[in-house]
Image 1 (tube, rainbow, N blue to C red):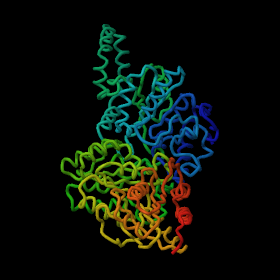
Image 2 (cartoon, one colour):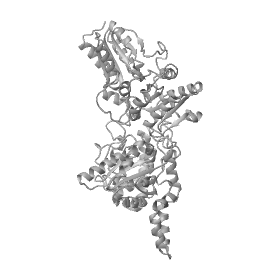
Image 3 (tube, helix red, strand yellow):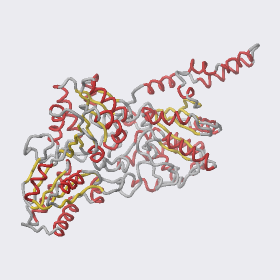
Image 4 (cartoon, rainbow, N blue to C red):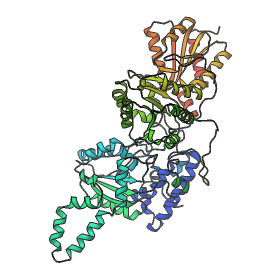
Length: 626
């Protein structure tokens, strides 16, 4: 295999030009095989094979810095920098990350995982290069989908002032995660379908120079260059900002891309190289449905069908079904997402209620403030965003939603450990950052039926900002009968006991049940509490627990710092209650990739560890079995 000849950076330069096509085919086949077993981001990676090859053939790594936006399309980059031997471990615990990681390779210039960051990071490298006097190229690769995020434009505005070379490769594949939306998508569509002004200008100039009076006319045309560009390329948005534009270029013509990259390298300012690619290139199922193949689990290579390990509903599917039912009865209910229509379970809603569905692109800040405007205008927005992505709208949640106490419902998907996508995607901070905001109510359902009930509560029994967090994966389907109806700020007691009370946050109920069984086996008679409300805290229940118990154990899949357990402990101390509080959560760390089961064991949130640590704590606290 040609791919086996690439053991380190720049080895691709030893592959003969006539074999580039064969190498690209090998890479695609290899990527499909690996992701079919381990899952991953397949469509985006298949689309940039030749683009990545052209970058590696043109530039010198690790001296030159390639910065990938999001980083979910960097698999070929990893292969071309000598990491093929480790690819069986990609996205597994202790293995390769599915995203660029500086600690993994000196060819990974910047850690990424969220969208619209590469231009800012690249410009930082450019300024650092200028101040240190070093000599290297900086290339930021940004997808057209990332240009729906406002941070890209902040960076472009600043990049226009660059006084030395900065190459921005616009990977235009007409997709982000869900189909691209908005003005930038239409703008790029216009460029793709227009005649390339660069080649046309050369032809016109060549003809004029050879004719009588043509030289003077040619010079006059040069003086009205901007008008000429406006005529043939819609908007010329980038050049109007002061950034040279080259393209559009075929993203599968390596020699053409090399030529463009070399031309771009000669300029002493920022330049955009517009490359047109296709998500899923070379694998028909991914070409036909790139959104579904954005991020996948294991799948059958022949059919492209997902290999599901459980027929049970996921939390996202439960929410989707509940939202459809609520939408039939509430005609002012609308749904908002940030380029995650499929991932957040809104596809059916978008199909049935297209006028009530809003995909704002990869723009979480805008999604939140836009929803605040919808609420102020008399609608009831349900905002569906992954936990780790909602972090990007933190300021807007505070100032635009909560400060005005607007009735906006945040459905926080992928809360807690998400597994193989690693540090940038783990949803471990939402309880902390949402709970500290005045006027915000935070809920967490223990099972699939309570998730439905909480959505109904948020719509009809609450008026103000409210967030409901739920995990990735299969919804818990035990404890169907609720002990009592949801009432604002009130927890639910599942088992009434004495001495030790286990307080469970949301989907940690499955673990909490196992822990209480272990406590019972060891002679204790524990109380089991379903927190339901992370904020406000059910202080009345804590007061009652203090009369019959000596210890509270809290279990949450969130950072300990600022989490549910800390709030319980702070109240116990403030009220001077005769209780000791023992908190289980995530320590002050970033959690890397791996299966959720493996990660729970690693961070000490599996039922065995929690049970053992709880028994040890009870012994140290002098609490003996009754």
